[in-house]
Picture 1: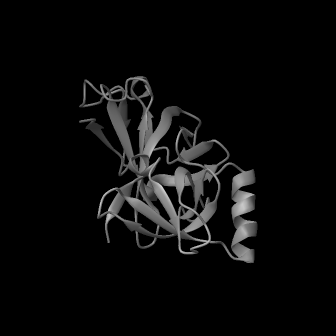
Picture 2: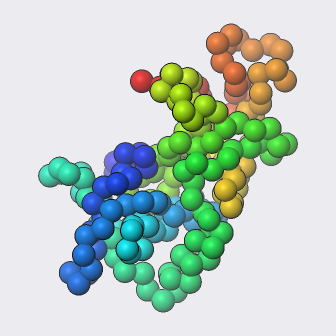
Length: 181
């Protein structure tokens, strides 16, 4: 099992197991809000269910299969509800804004999100600290919004923070801060 970062896959070749369907480019990853699994690869021309990721030989290729009738209905509903994780607004249960998702990590076996990466400075995310939130702390994935546990709170709301350079503090949460390198 290998872990993949969503942002690294955007724009990569999207192939189908059906030889009649031509190669495409990955534009979005559609996520199941109930279990955090990737439902579909969204290309320019096609929507495919994930099958595998071919990391070598380069360039990286994503291989998907044509959805069956039941899956098409689930995918259509997820598309209607805009269940995309990238660029979604992230808030705590109590409504504190944490930032927007600029990347997420998933494994290529279960296709489930393992953690999301948040920055409140999208334009300068290479220079700022990122907040990493594990799947255990993600409560809800909805239309353009993700709700996480209240363990992450704004620095001004927590007076005794040991990390002076951090805007966020983890309070009994699995979330962690990291410098983007």
